[in-house]
Length: 336
Image 1: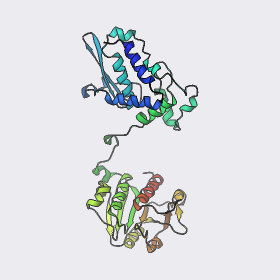
Image 2: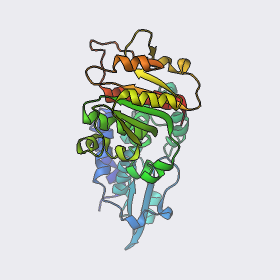
Image 3: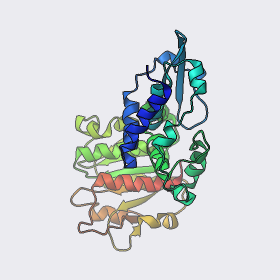
Image 4: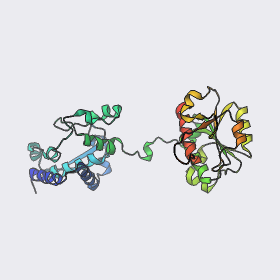
């Protein structure tokens, strides 16, 4: 078997073939993906290594006088570094490992172009920087480069969450949870896919209810479900034969009614925080047909109109896109 130094030299030679930092990081990611999976029984608190944002499990077995390492991590680049450490150290005696001068990491990343200028570390996110920087120190106390930091954020700090990590409510919990005091009204929306998309956005921000009016289709419907993905089950809805009936009911209940339309004297959406009245009950927003928009008589019945400023050639947004933007603005304003 090759000595530790011989194995280190192999690693250094492989990485020195790359002149582009991104290639080096890609190789680390590839090595991590090739690492043999660690048996789930070894992913326990005893094998968890403390000290950084990512989680690393290290299992060490003593076999025929030699130490055999297996490991895993939930971070791609860290997993690649682990693969290199296992390659260099696993299968050697405790004495050989204790006496080894581990230089392959430093030599593989010998160029540190931003080390002399710490200001170039900044990601623009002070909170993230202050949290991450203490973790970004190697064994010799030398800070990693700006490139290291960018990749670290991309693959570790910005790791995509698994579904089970998103704290999603069950249907029962959603029904019981506090709702955003906002009712979304669809005025003759033709496309079932648009209807489903609106339900999905309303679910995301726990909107109080959706009012479906006129020709707007209602659940249960296979086509609505394709884009609603169950939002039509979680969000309360009510059907009205005419939008006028829906607006009358909203006003009787004390809601402030906005039509989302381009009209004279409209309030630009970004000015909503300054323009909205303080009401104890809530708000309603009306979205119109894909071609004709909100009907003029419905605009006349409304307490106000909101408009999304646009700067291109169309001045026309898809109704479900518009709904997502407007509902998000109310979610920020009302702070559920």
